[in-house]
Length: 197
Ligand SMILES: [Zn+2]
Image 1 (cartoon, rainbow, N blue to C red):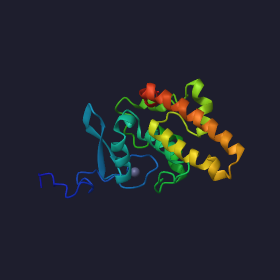
Image 2: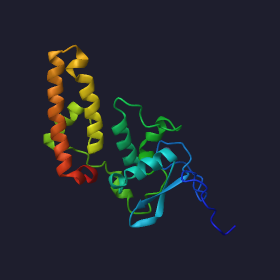
Image 3: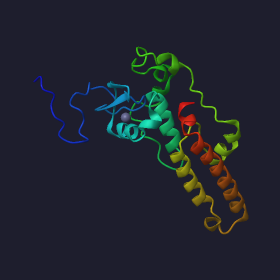
Image 4: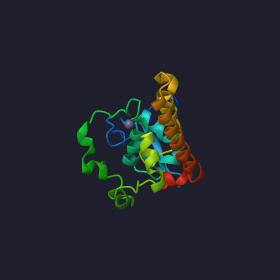
């Protein structure tokens, strides 16, 4: 049994998985899927459940360098509006206590990320975007993708046609349009600022 077993399907759990829970702090699912922590360190893995490894792989550029807690906070911020929240697994509220957030699995203490993780991430948006983000009900940092999704939903909800031709709805939609344009152009010109803080 020295040979590593082949993976039968693309999305079958990795047979070499260490049998622990998904590295997302509040996810209680088995962490059967590996994801390299960075491009330069492809032998060091997070272990995620299928949902979380898909989210991670689909957003590699955005999530690289973030801890699972930061990724999860971002996922929740992006998905909590008008859509079901990211599944929280089975740990419950205790997953969010300070120790869990600091270093839930003691996986960061050894690789130099611990110090960075203890301080809250510098998530202050640029001052000129604060009001616009509030109008769009978005937290910071955010992504172009999240802003577009949010805008589409808001535009649909506040469209005058959906509100009996209401003037108030028309005014709200104008405000939303302005906020969207401002945030979008900021992200388009400085795409990495939002992700790296
Ligand atoms: Zn998970």
